Length: 102
Image (cartoon, rainbow, N blue to C red; front, side):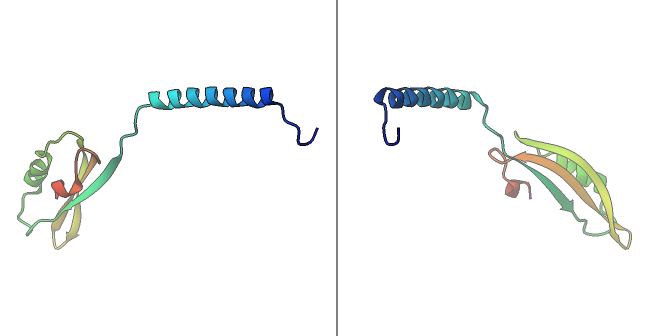
């Protein structure tokens, strides 16, 4: 009972384990790879209160790259009548570097 082992039982268990590992690796290889994405909030601050922020938004969104998706934007008051522009974007880490946007 204790300490006895059957060679056939061990061989059968090893064969079953190998089949399960093979099936697991085949299933794992069929899954698509995850795409790493980063959500970025850019603050665009004007030089003075006369800067056209709508033109600035259009200029920001002229940047077109594969893996870059522009999102919502809004004007946030800073003070003294000056507003900064906040622009959201989502970048795929493999295709676009955040340093390229700034």
